[in-house]
Amino acid sequence: MNIYQHFRVEEHSFIDHVMEWKDGVIAQYSPKLTDFLDPREQQILSSVIGQDSEVNYVCFGGSEYVERKRALIFPSFYEPREEDFQIALYAINYPQKFVKIEHPQVLGSLMGIGLKRGKFGDILIKDGIVQVVIASEVANFVLMNLESIGKSKVSLEPLQLKEIIQVQEQWIEEICTVSSLRLDVIVAEAFNLSRTKSLPYIQGGHTKVNWKHVEEISFECKEGDMISVRGNGRVKILQIEGKTKRDKWKLLIGRIK
Image 1 (cartoon, one colour):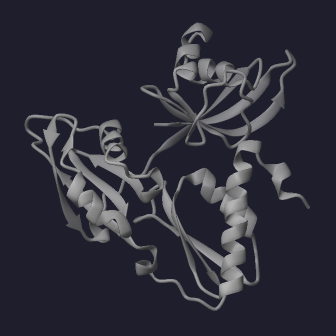
Image 2 (cartoon, one colour):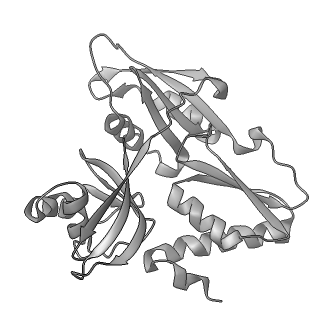
């Protein structure tokens, strides 16, 4: 069976990476630790490795509720430990009385010092507390180079993983109907925007499908896709339930409460 047929063309290169990792574990009889993977990449990894008798995998990103996780791919005889994932947790200290730090600012600052997205996991913010999960191998680099976020000076404080902020998202389900599965149509309907207003979000690079920027308005969405629009939240297509009598697509979507 050709595994590629179940995935979009743009995902084929990641599938190749997973197959290389799997083959390497089998050949070398040793574990392979990946960078942080988004949930879609974790799903692909699960599909590629499947129920293999020679190779197993576990994903971990600091807690049960985080999205981005490192995967440890290992021979069936190996017993993984938490320290195998090489994850460091830091609190970002800043003058909370005078400034407010938000997720995009932290993300931009980490990328701004030259850190690849795969080298850090979730950015967690709750009640003014800001934490970031980082791959241990780049922790010293971040400590030396991350001096400010926005206009605020910051410092990093190491924490134990048991101190991680537990942020559990709550989802509500809704039914909506759309004339097409094009991205512009679904964004307009799901986020209660006019078609005219939805276009700048997509063409301006403010829309992601499965954690990847998509600027093509005719991009065809599929069941399971996570769609986020900057400043408007995100929704997930939980199920495509088929066509209505008026020849529209009936979708079950999930929305963060």
